[in-house]
Image (cartoon, rainbow, N blue to C red; front, side, top):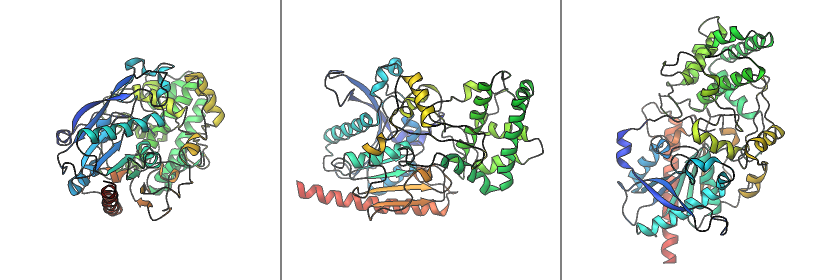
Length: 469
């Protein structure tokens, strides 16, 4: 789920935002554990289009990575701010980017224990409340936005703090599957479907390549595997083969998620329509293993500078089978996938085109108790954040793209007149990205719908606030 982020600053967007730090409470729920300890939480703010003291506040609930990357890849929010004269704030999630509560020690036990969904939501609620005071914006309606895990947080903000947040746009938010309410086969089946929809032969070629790799592994022909996949070192164990499977499967996952109609630099460098490019590569000749290597290279060697693939540097196996990214951010996400975020997805080579790789509740428990000394609570998100019993909530847009393997882990049908499902033809939270000439008509229509609904929420909240004052 999480991001392999690359630096992709666009100077235009950077000039809109000022980077600031907020003195944030370390532990919102225990008055003894940390005293009144604080940490510096990073946020980005732009008042370029704001009608001061009157226009709404558009607040992005930051997710598992550097907040600049989300700000620079969520241009729709700025476009909406221009239309609706809004103040824009992108808040960085604790333990990600530069918002490390204990610096480099943040990922030690027990310091990491303050990394929870609940603490992050409390951070955002405190930040919104205090910044509204500082900016003389107490009467300004707040709308939250987020993509993927950030979209989940937008849903939860509206559920837990409706006193602070008037509505939320949750783009590509898999709130059902991450609460353990989905089918463990769904994710990699839907990744497979993306490639199958380009051409069934593409799916068959991928499956065939993995079958050839399996045969080489079973005969311990490790030097051949090294040469076929241009690995820096020959594999020497079943664990190395498992790692290679994970690395290759992760490449297809990222291309399916980021199957945008134009080239992007979000979570890595991707060509336009990467799933189509991958299928063209897989079907480019009879050498299936070479084709599989080159297809993975679309993700891992986009710049062409790597002379070989380092199995353990390019991909980390973790408690999220869809990938944890790299660096410090990967540690934080791994911990979250070991505690509250349930990501027990498997591939099985029957409902999908990948090697059988199980990741059961038992596997998760064993890994997490060894790695982080925690026992996951598989049903906690369902209990704490309502699961699919959302009918009493209000003012949430659930947008999902038909190309996104996360979509079927989210809300695809409207639940009421104010819990609205918006389906797009795009990939992972494409609707949050800025307008582009190559946008499909479905995404253009979705953004228009979202803008209209948000405008209504702002008016309703303004009326409510005025009756209170």
